[in-house]
Length: 121
Image (cartoon, rainbow, N blue to C red; front, top):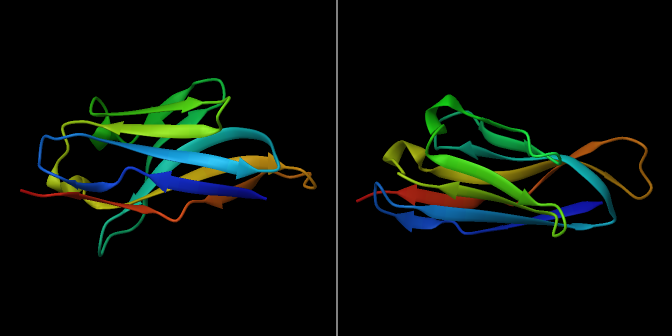
């Protein structure tokens, strides 16, 4: 079992910055991939960014150059630094992980509770 706890959301003006954090806890063996998804009202959930344990990253095209995903493997924590925020970035952001835990022979997907990011003047 893996539990993800997110923090860092809030209200910010266009052009501003926020940093989201997500800490994983539990009987963790490994977390090959961590990432962030977001869902805006009336829209489908979309993948924002992912990062592997080896540091490989990928991003949604619309956030490239503005968002940076990183992780601290020793702390089982993933971050999303969001710069040059736009109103269209407004959404609930969810931390997700593909992980293995004690007692399981398969990788499973876990989700955080979500944190609201609102970009508005």
